[in-house]
Image (cartoon, rainbow, N blue to C red):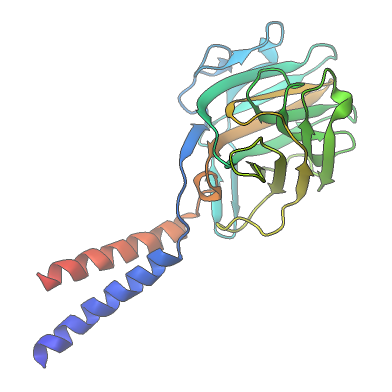
Length: 278
């Protein structure tokens, strides 16, 4: 009887830990991440694999003052540095791209922190995943521009911007940090990517049942291997941080510290219970 009473707390701790861990979503693979912390301040070109278009490099720079976002169970912190894309005059686009490990997963997720200090009505910023450095080639993208709105946007394999399919959602405010999360998927496993879904400012570690913006259009590609972003217009200041690409929502959306503490307690309880049985 005494032995049984000593083991009961350990068993309860083990059961509690099992239930807590079972409730946690299965983590996917993080394919790419960049928080700009290890980069030198200044020109982004030729750092961490990035290529910045010639003529726009002075507008695409790493700077101090990382972005951060916290809401509900989600917390993203970009550290002490961020990327700034800015223009003081019209003309050339500020554009950059970087490759990552190719993936043909049926669902690919991405996230990034976004903020703008100023922007005129004619300005825009794109963040896109594709298999090409050209925006006109099969891109699944986030668009922020005139009118001031977030927009899911897909370009098929077309020669110009006119054939884009779009879905507007939300209106970003200046000097406010947003966490943008997206999913690019294949409605037919093994086929082409043909759906883009976007969400601004999630507060849960579970993928939403309904996204903020959705576009269904054949992107004509079945593999993703790069991301790129650019801005156009003048008198603007867009900022980005903590970029992530992965194969699950949980690989690109980070839990706030309290959730990690609970996970640590559950793991510790299970470990201690196991040792006591020996």
